[in-house]
Image (cartoon, rainbow, N blue to C red; front, side):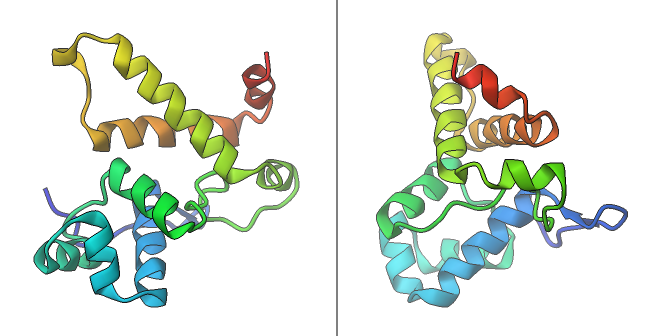
Length: 148
């Protein structure tokens, strides 16, 4: 399955998670040599081109590797790519890295508990992380549950 274009929800002006991750990846490429990114990910120039053009998705593990190795800020999935206002601004103030780390660790922990044949791949794991972050965005009181 390839991704040619990313639709934007025009009513709310909100970008979908895949587009946010893709734009985050393109921003990394603007600031660094493509060869450096390819070497970090251990991919060919062909795969890097597919990632760049949106014909292939960045895997969750690749996103985390880039985040850790380049000390790059994580994509802003909490605000959904929107400018935050009102109640959303309080969620925006929450450390995005901590939220992502919490969600990613939680998903990985749940996957480790499953029998190996029932575990999801890296992309599905990242989708679960995005679901958690979206839930937090929509229900900020969910953050209080994390501390219990």
